[in-house]
Length: 451
Image: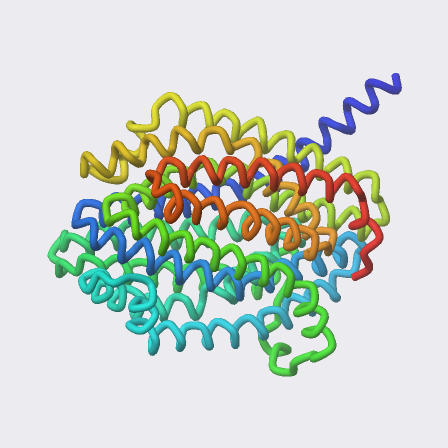
């Protein structure tokens, strides 16, 4: 009888995890489809265009995620409030998070618009890539201004247990992005052929649409939280300070991750335009595997936070481990595909033979890091949901700057090896990261964090 009850509870927990994870996974799928579409269409233009959009997009989204990490603090505070039955408090936190993030988004958009050219001059010496990249980033700046508040409000919705609205927001925006890519990059259906500028404009239009869906639903009263725009005008400095304190480690983690990727991209760019383009294609292909990890990370964050708000530490711990196991199972399956049919996958994104073949070899190596990424992503999400944003930051700091960056430096500058060895380095990095994240979660210090 006891075993039957335990099995029923486990099955109920899995259903709860899946209910939250599936919409988040679908949201990630829609984002990945856009990335795939962008890469595939730009990949038909030139290696320079592919490099410009790759560098520009990487810069824009990486820095946006640094600011958008404010959503981690919002998610942790909202989920605790919902778990404790304090809905009005959850609404108030969400309103203040929106106010704070809107100002940050405008600030970031202005920097991208006015400094686009100088930024690209620091990233590459190729004049054509610089010119294309400046055009791309200037147009994208208008969409970036809305990315941060949209990301933060979506995080608050997830903390309240609503992963459907963020999914719909992303889906609508991404459908418009793909359509915009097709008609604006190549000039189909009577539209002008804008190439790289068209890709940037399509992304900007999609971000505007996504923001309208998220803000509209969050203020409608039909979501798990309700944002009253009329009450947003007065900033609560004490609450904002708490949001900032909780989110700062996540922002620093994103900044560290973005800086390391930027540095590694600059180094990889020294291997040649073909190598960098192949790396972009392989990274785009691998992004398909992040979908389960992201989805279960979101589920773990919400359930852990709500369970702690309800004073149920045991349920929180079970949710973290169960979400990690489910994530590893799905990402492991994707890893098998990467190993068996890598060239068919990379062929989706480019028809340049040398780029496709090199990217396929890298993707095959990437198959061996999938389970490690699953555990690392999901348990990091569980820790953040508990309010332990410092834990994942410390782990990431170690694995990026003491493992990944030194190994890539050795590959490029000391051994002067090929791109494949860069990917071997990341396999090592993610394995160590998964071990450290598992140890951090198992230790259980996150259970005693007060929000």
